[in-house]
Image (cartoon, rainbow, N blue to C red):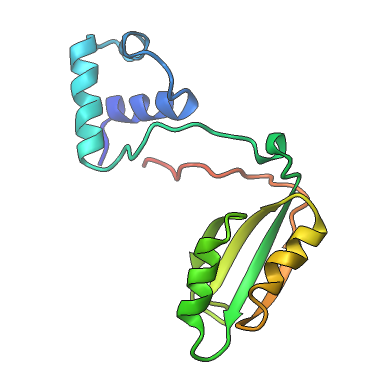
Length: 145
């Protein structure tokens, strides 16, 4: 569990992972060494996994997103999983319960890209895809409470 100070540190870092240690310490009313120690403990506990960059796929020409439900044919689960892992346009994929085994998110430049990618899978799995019109909730943290 996080105390209020750790929560505040994480919230600030989620908003701006490039903030300087000095500025972070000032914003949480701690010394730099105390803030550094809290950061180290948060990393050791696995609360903070990485300091990263948020890149907009659209700025790289990937203007479309698709959600793909994938149901491998009998005996093909591991082959399908390997294929999905190797296709770089799959930016996320979850192994799920239910009728489908995988739900993936693709970033693509065109519908023909979607067809090309799905063609690699369709002899090993059934797929159902939907183009994303908007993303009202971007990936975010669950509540700390």
